[in-house]
Length: 360
Ligand SMILES: Nc1ncnc2c1ncn2[C@@H]1O[C@H](COP(=O)(O)OP(=O)(O)OP(=O)(O)O)[C@@H](O)[C@H]1O
Image: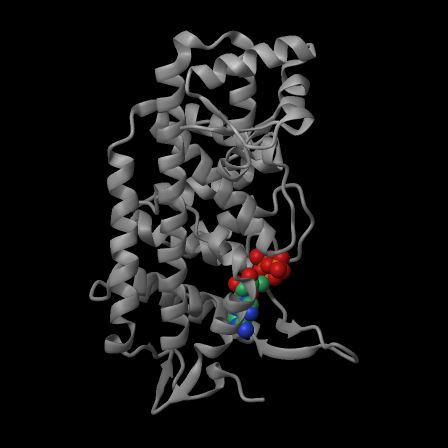
């Protein structure tokens, strides 16, 4: 198999501008809409929204690689880091991961090899990995597990003795390229970086942090792209592979760029829905706080903490009893009062299965 870096097309990544135009316009529109919605949030809502997106990005970027992080630990580290930005001590791995994310999102300066190697060190804080904090010194292959027999090698990263020079070329392009629209530049950068695969491990996660960095040079992405990638992992891997066809001395990256732009738009749509959820939830609490007792507020908070999908499922008398740790008659009274206050709507089914929809 001839790899793209063995051809004269390397590293001339290009795409068909007309073909990507609709996806580019849609992505930019969707990103703008989330940014606009964010601008209208109050400071508490904004803080919560930002925190949620950061936590989600960390969890999802690891989840793509099949690693489940402890959500509560990540959230605690995000809160601590946002409060004490200058904090140097990294007590837990989650602190190091959040430090990496904040570095990627925060620094608007040019990206260099030293920073990338520092990100690698942060990513594997407290974990043994080959060539920690430096380019890998061995060959690396990307394999797809075959259904039977030995795994298929689908791609081989650049030979180790070329990595330093090629990373230099990549970073120089990244820091000097100003003609491409930001989302298109981020797409090409991600594909290029993954094609070099400079580290022993963590190339996917650092490659996604580079995307965050590129947007942060203008405005940090107001949502988690990794969550969207996680939803379409197969599409992501296929697009990476498809976006490297050699044509007339160029690397034809259009399929990857389009996939990436569509992922951005989908991620933005999802985030917009989340921001609206936060707004609607807070409006409910603000409007009804006076007519609800402490038990009712607590149960609603527990329900809303589980996210929009869960809230849409509504609640049952049984759930209310369990969450409020109260007797059946008190629960019935509380639920009746919430119905009267226009917070809940009782469903058709009665008796033991009585179910309520939350009105917000
Ligand atoms: N065909 C491909 N060509 C180039 N890069 C690819 C291809 N398929 C997948 N990738 C990238 O390689 C990453 C996996 O590389 P690596 O293992 O170094 O990163 P990682 O973040 O540690 O992920 P993992 O934990 O899955 O190993 C994927 O997340 C993806 O970004």
